[in-house]
Amino acid sequence: MITVQAAAQRELRSDEVLVFDWHHVAICCAGAGETSLRAAPGTSIAGSSTYRLLPGDPVAPVYAHRQAYPHLVDRDVTIDARRLFGRRQFRSNLPSDFGLRASLGRLPAQPSSPTPRGGVR
Image 1 (cartoon, rainbow, N blue to C red):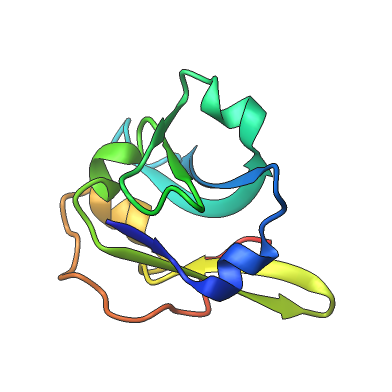
Image 2 (image 1 turned 180 degrees about the vertical axis):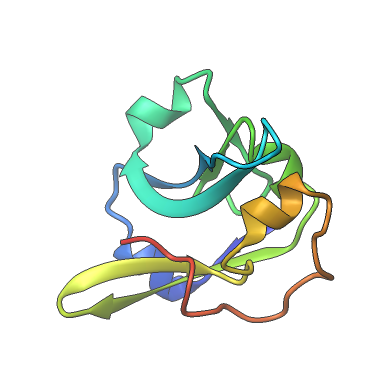
């Protein structure tokens, strides 16, 4: 279940959704990748076959790239936001190397609090 904290909901514009993207990395495993978190226009994401809606609060929808979706759908993820030098940063409680660990089958136990690393403006 995805939980979007009040601070992150305030930082989202009315036409935006949160998106976990998947970035391929060049290592031994063809499917290996890394995740990032960003805000995107809801109209371009909701109609795309590349992204899938994650279960969570419908007030602040969160989508995941189809390659990140299987790694995120059954996890409890908390998303928070803050402003740094006037720019908004969204962050989650996932480890900074979540995608690589997921690709290699080495995910840690459920994390409990947001970490400052791994978020994207």
